[in-house]
Amino acid sequence: MNQLQAMRVFTRVVDLSSFSLAGKQLGMSAAAVTRSVGMLEAHLNMRLLNRSTRSLSLTEAGRLYLDGCRAVIDKLDEVESELVRATRDPSGVLRIAAPSVFASGALSTLLGAYRGVNPRVDFDVTAYDSHIDMIEGGFDVCFATDRQQVNASLVSRKLTSVKELVVATPAYLSRKGMPRSPADLSQHDLLAVSDAPRSWEFANAEGVQRVNVNGPLTASGYATVRAAALADMGVALLPLPLVADDIARGVLLPVLNAYDVNGGMQHVCIVYSGRNYLTMKVRSFIDFAVEQFRSHPTQTQMQAHIAPAPHAMPHALRAVAQFAA
Image (cartoon, rainbow, N blue to C red; front, side, top):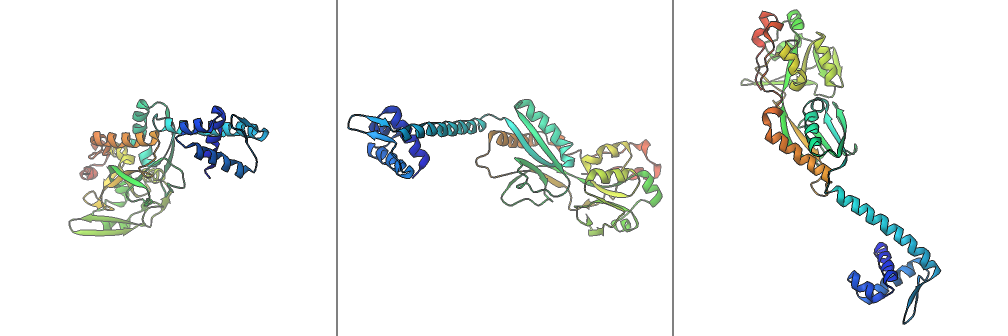
């Protein structure tokens, strides 16, 4: 027995005082209506209606049960109405997870633009540098790079790309020397994110070289590694958006720029659960994000070419100031 459907049938019979009229309104035969009420009474093991050839009346138990039925049905209808409205009108809190570098840069711009169009949507953003479980975290939408493991049940759509750079300060390079090849890094202090691979991979036309990272500092976040690099502690591998201003000001210099690092550009993707049954706030945000990155590629490619300020570095280091995406 579908108890909820039987409750709806029962309340309609009482409202209309007729099995046949209730059946017409519900698209059921009078016999099916009678059978539904009978099954409900059998389930409860009590009579709900007094029946005669001319009239119907509620028993005492029927009156009590009717009030409960109405409360349950009204609440269910309210919940369903709210769900339908939520799928048509973007509103509520959108829970988002994103790598910290993306969260502090491109994501902030994206959220501002989206909220300008959908002011009833608020955001709860979790920034991360190490691994995060996107399903257990209960996020509506996540951003991830293609080097992060994503559950196969999730949908992933590429948005943009981010370049990684090997950088160090002019003071450090003056003290330790400028690396001319990946092999030279064995003589340097290497700074790394703890959740990253324990080796850096450099590739050019001559092949691939790998350098083991055993330096004086590892940290769970890029911000700490950047701060250590700025403190002249060593050579760091960092995303371009995090160090673009530092390079432009000459406080960090790109190193070994003739090589692709760790396979080249990282792709940033938007990740979410299956395409069906998404609420309007989630679906509209995904569509908005994809369209924004598609429509403004020059703003979202994380600055393809940057040169440090020449006056901010020693003359001997100026030759390494240029780098390509």
